[in-house]
Length: 93
Image (cartoon, rainbow, N blue to C red; front, side):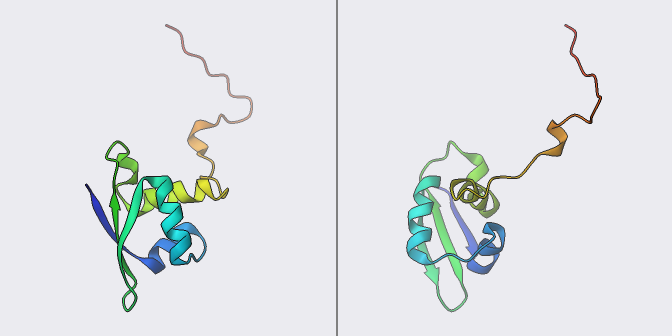
């Protein structure tokens, strides 16, 4: 299974808040992942993904995005999906 490596402080920056190891363990379950090791001295984490059907989770940014959504922080607006006011768009087939 894929294993990703990241530093805890980088991960917390992506998550938008600090996180304790027990909470991290439980939230990783939402990503079908588990914390294999964490070096307290350097903050380096090794996360093993147990499901390879979600390639968006194969990086720490994807894991943080999934956790933000689960925590209610949302994933943010994608402005390119919106239409400017008064825009008339249509598809003719």
